[in-house]
Length: 263
Image (cartoon, rainbow, N blue to C red; front, side, top):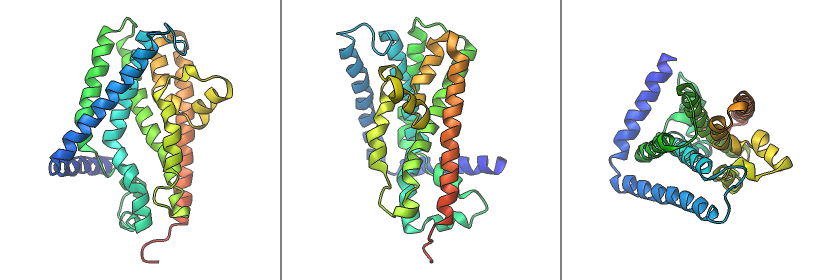
């Protein structure tokens, strides 16, 4: 464990120094994400001009969801997004060979090697927004609730990445440029919306099969619905473990069928 921690700290140091070499890209990504955050707030603000309740939530509860989603998205963009970009390229070009011969998990290198330092400022901004609203919100919570809430949001960011990998790992067999990434991007917009707007089988599908609603909606429900916290946590654990198991099995299967650059 200590070896992997030292290795990850090295990844962070290298990524930070590399980001400073491309300062235009650094500030452009900040500007781009700030526009994205503004659009999220504006979208729901306009909706609440016409209705007091959406998906069972009032405007204060929805604002908490927006801040939660923004934080989770910024966390993913900082620590996981670059790795998902390089994932299919490393497989198709045979770069995975270099990780397979190293005395560490090849999946660890593929999943955690790149940190988007140019998104770190966005993570700080998202964190400030979340803390600011948590200080203003009329929703009551304890320090324990807050700790679990943040942990659930970080899990949501990692879960988003793992769901994405399910659509990228088929590159082992298809050898396409991006796997089924286009299908993922068509579906992942579900995570931008509260789970309460979906009903019946669709709601259950996005909770347990492709659990985009687990990413930000259910952590928000954890703070809002005091009487259902144990059920909410159980749902999050079940859905997360299900996706993590699927990724593990697909990765092992993919390695068996992998054709290295030398073959």
